[in-house]
Amino acid sequence: MKVDGKPYRTIWLSQDGTTVQVIDQTLLPHDFVVRDLKNVVNATNAISNMVVRGAPLIGAAAAYGMALAMAEDPSDAMLARAYTLLLESRPTAVNLRWALDDLRTLLAPLPPAKRRDAAYKRAAEICDEDVEICRRIGANGLELIRKLKPRGDRINALTHCNAGWLATVDWGTALSPIYQAHNAGIPIHVWVDETRPRNQGASLTAWELGKHGVPHTVIADNAGGHLMQHGRVDFCVVGSDRTTRRGDVCNKIGTYLKALAAHDNGVPFYVGLPYPTIDWTIEDGHRDIPIEERSARELSHLTGRTESGELATVAVLPEGSPAANPAFDVTPARLVSGLITERGVCAASEAGLLALYPEQSRAA
Ligand code: MRU
Image (cartoon, rainbow, N blue to C red; front, side, top):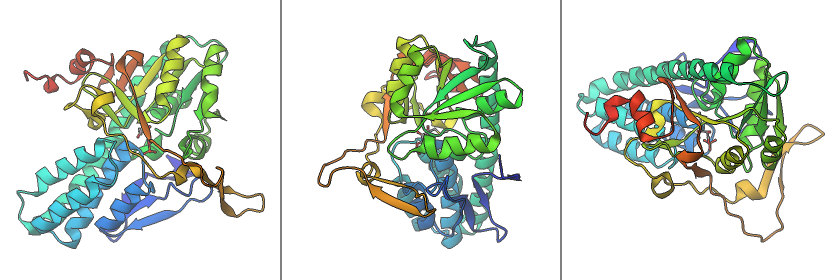
């Protein structure tokens, strides 16, 4: 995607061939800053502090984190240490484990002298593959959008959190069909949930849609149900951090409430996801997905630009009030109208997923 006319991915290798560069997402939409990741600790901190975030980008950053570790020290001990360090950086998005397993399986049998180059090559492949996967998710989602019968003169989508190009290497998952519809000349407008407490919708989704010229309106998280009751949402589309074998979808906190409202109002509720987001080892998302608990400070404080132009952080809770911050929730498969993957659209069920990924059948 382009930022002010210049094409960007969210992660890339710098000219020196070792340093990894990323867009610092904690500063958007106020400042566009590129950060250098020079070692595995930098990569781990970038993931845990959400300088990079979004399940596919977390996976890509973890792959480059392993490469940085191998550039520092290609020993077996470092391989094991880097794997553990990165795995513990965030618990919910399964793309992290997927990327780390992929890199470890590749690197462990190699002699240490060959590990650095192999790791960088594989990390670059994971990034390129993510771009192509997300492009295909968009193409498959576009076919769904073409079939919608909008109630007004434009299609109104609703999305939660940020599952756009900032959450992936490029294109996005949930937003890829929207970009492709917009590029195809289909009049589409997006209701963007602000997505408290970290405001990924208001800060990131609104920013990237705006940069691409996609009409959008930011709404309070609580407004979606009301808009659906009044026929002002034609479909919902969100991303996923982990989707189980039977199609339960874990995504940013508040997704479940949107799915309930969509179900109650007969609004289709789609989820866009790439194959590394599917956790074939579990079925029951409610029981088996670890839900990240983040700092209460993300709820108690807000950062923004003051009218005089500086960035400022303010407290919004009464001093002493405790706050809780579960970062994800699970939407049961029964509330999901369809899963949009790189291989096509399927029902949110084991049979639906296996029809697209037959190699994951237990008999295979
Ligand atoms: O906490 P975040 O910002 O990493 O959460 C991101 C989401 O919940 C996204 O919807 C999900 O990772 C899918 S991204 C294509």
